[in-house]
Image (cartoon, rainbow, N blue to C red; front, top):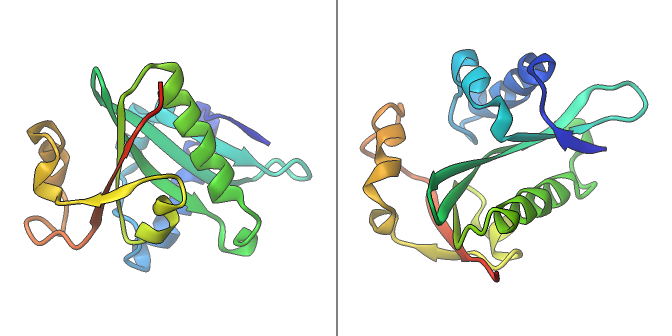
Length: 153
């Protein structure tokens, strides 16, 4: 079941993201940042036990630009299309807010290509997003792939 995240979900989201940040597949997100952005998140809650097994955030950057962030699925639930469904939900949310472009910084560009994203040069992203990049442990040697999707409104 996919729903908007609640404060009670932040620790579970943090734990899920931390699993992938330890593997170098996602950038770390401190608990304080997750609390600041909890309203950006959608979560997949297991109907049987209520555990959070997937998450994805849509962060608004500008009046016509948003970013998909922190897409993660518990490793025991990979291959069940949970990531796909979470991505569809946040793209629908972007459309509801009349967002014209959605981007993602990713290590899995093939996943985003399935949704119509195309690879772009990271330098084409607006300066506003660089404020987050400066805090990244990989700055200025970013190795993520920038992907952009023009939304059909």
